Length: 83
Image (cartoon, rainbow, N blue to C red; front, side, top):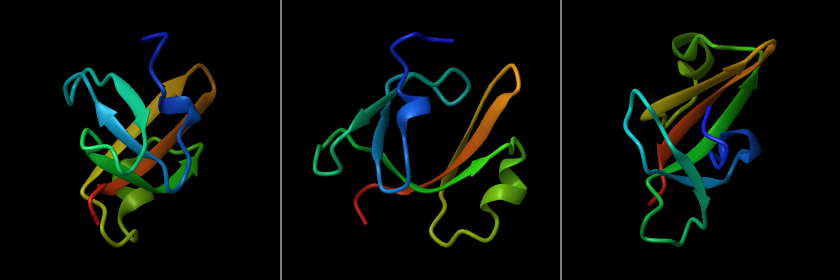
């Protein structure tokens, strides 16, 4: 896990920039007005790592990010930050 990764501090309505790749994300929390903002958190599902189930019913979802460390896990349903 990357120590400066902001994944665990993101909540619904927050925007982010992925400075890494899809397979090795490096997430930075940014203002939604920031031109670097690529996604906005639409929903956070605690205890879930099955993004297909967690985000299926969330309108506007374009991506999902799953985080897991020991017994702590959640999925973020992400949409376009510009909408």
